[in-house]
View 1 (cartoon, rainbow, N blue to C red):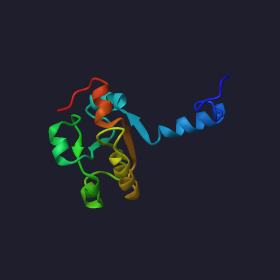
View 2: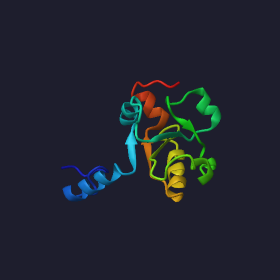
View 3: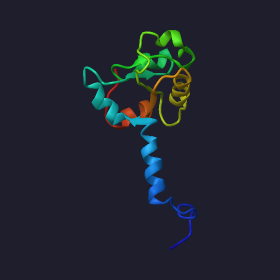
View 4: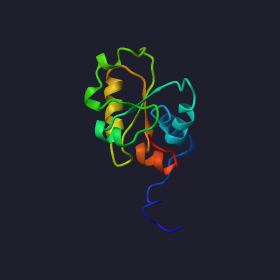
Length: 130
């Protein structure tokens, strides 16, 4: 076997891989699963587009609420029960806005996940924006 950047560090054990990948689903979901859930009258979460109002106005996931990270404060969330799951998204993999917003929500004691891929991933999956 050749030595290269891929195999220079051995892969984790199966047990470690199971623990790692299983844990990641506690923190993230993907565009496909969000799209599927949003077709329901009760998706089980509130989808937050954390981009600027201008970007939101240009196109966003249907059903998403625009709430920029700096406005994620307790008073803005008061209408939602404490156990409401929030799912955040931003522009895409090149943007960490969804993670920053998720951190802000977590600091307020709110359950949260990010939608990996953001708008870029959403469009890559063939879904449309409104």
